[in-house]
Length: 338
Image 1 (tube, rainbow, N blue to C red):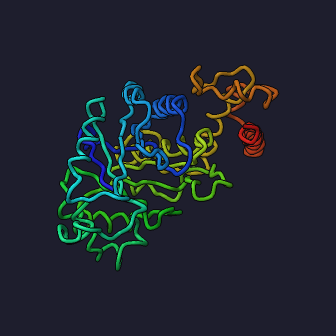
Image 2: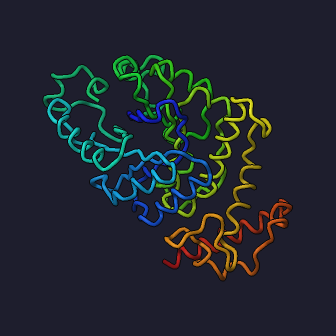
């Protein structure tokens, strides 16, 4: 998956991909997303919902993202039926239309497609890599994959490549695996992270913290973008803990203060405490707005009292677990009643 972000080529991309199968998020949910990302210091959003047939929605959101300091990355997935030898001008025309609307960062996605060339492309190109995955699908392995070697040798160095890790959904991603793919691609990969994705099993929600990725990954990567749960409001913890990981990585590499290391458990506790005000009676929360970001209006009857800030910071692990369970139970009841 190629990612061209010329305006932020030296920036570590850290943010969210709307890249799942299922109903895309609404305009109000995206506005809320950009506000939360700004508050969490996340800097990139990729628009790539699999079930938007045109990958084209409310273009005003481009400017909303820009105003909140978030790089908007527009993605196209042309690989299902594109003839590379004939249709590149059509691709450029579509990207030009989006560029004229203010977008300056683009991604071309070639995931979940047939790996073989078709028709005239067979005689025009030696391999799909010349015309246009994850570690478990590299043949025979990452270091010896001709596909990855071709991409690394022929793709312009300023274009980044996205990588899901050793698997499509990777429980852990090690520095050794990233070094291997980085050498094959001749550039630092950007992780398309499916750790919290649930579009392959919509009966589940993934509400745990960002984990299984050490801080030693950061110097080896061009960024990490999480492709989370389809249910927008379920992703506060995923976003918050990723943002905390990123801040810890910056402190670790830049010699900044704030302690060393990153604890997923501590990050989860902080995320739940930050999320609490949105569920309190009468509380707008630090991330609430009138355009769809205020969960308190929907959940006013769920919590009987709003904990004071001092109480929230001193809450015990057991109390935190009970509050978190109450929030999730309340939130789930709202979803099921829709």
